Image (tube, rainbow, N blue to C red):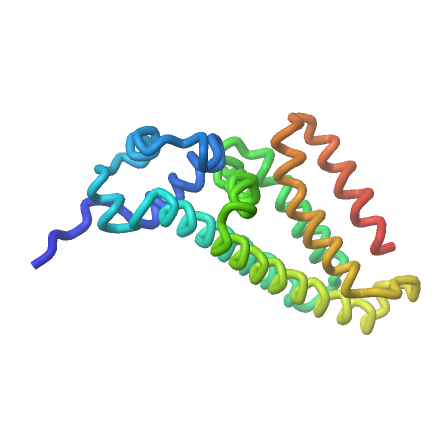
Amino acid sequence: MGRNKEFDTALVLHKAMEIFGQNGYEGTSLQELLSYLGIARQSLYDTYGTKRDLFLSAVKMYLEGKNAAVMKRLEAPGSVKEAIRDIFQEGVNVLKDPERSKSCFIINSAIEQIPRDSDLSLYFEGQTKQLEDAFYQALVRAEAQGELKGGHVDVSALARYLNQTRLSLTFIAKVTTDFDQLQDYIEVSLSVLE
């Protein structure tokens, strides 16, 4: 009979998001990781596999949670433009919060690993496509509701732009502490919907 785990696996994944977000994948040594997570090396291997496996699990947990929230908001009845603004604003609100922002920066760590990790690259490609499709469907609905003026020739391109712009907030927040600049960035970015 196997031993029961003596730790909360979801909490460990959340803490992994934080340390990988702060230090990057390469910048987080195995010893630092184990110390921050409060688990033994064998527990890491038994539960998650390698450091890379833990990183992938943390990235997936983060992205799937965030993407589900974005898609739910985009699919909600009402104004699509307001939904998109809410999505961008929530991104800034999270980045302003010292505790909640820790896990957001795992995106930067993951992006730096993509050129060296084909599994991660394929995963990001699939997640990106899924969100672009969600933005596309919402924009089609916005057009049908009369929220968009007729100037948007390529709704697919607009959907890609909005998704990538939303993702870039984490990069900008890592290089500036001026959240007024982030608000300006949102306003300018969303002006394409006017």
